[in-house]
Image: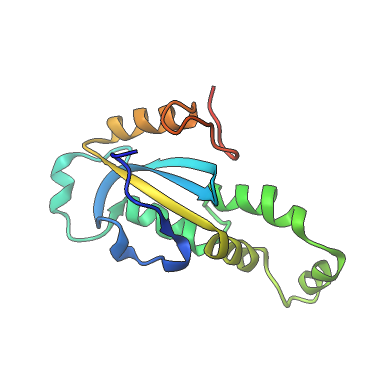
Length: 150
């Protein structure tokens, strides 16, 4: 996919890896399996590039890298579909004792296993359209495991 960046490991996450202000689409991979496609910058306009603070892709990917379930649907999907099914009885005891949190395990999984790539869009509308194509399987040849679209 020439319009998408090279793969970047979440283990190497730094906001400097993504443009500070940009609308776009991202694909998240677990080894060779596409697990999630998303977008950021729905209300983005080209004039937003002159902003000095971070906006768009960088803030969304930063949220995903954090592993925090609160307010992040991707992290909820990872926790519910991948992390929780892998827990055993001994791990459940660490939750009951307050020694472990689902946020921490989700972050650990994301940072240990997942990679992402992104494509910049000129507008929020363009990003939205590309995200739909990715989720339908039209861009990568497969639908994402966690959020496929019809």
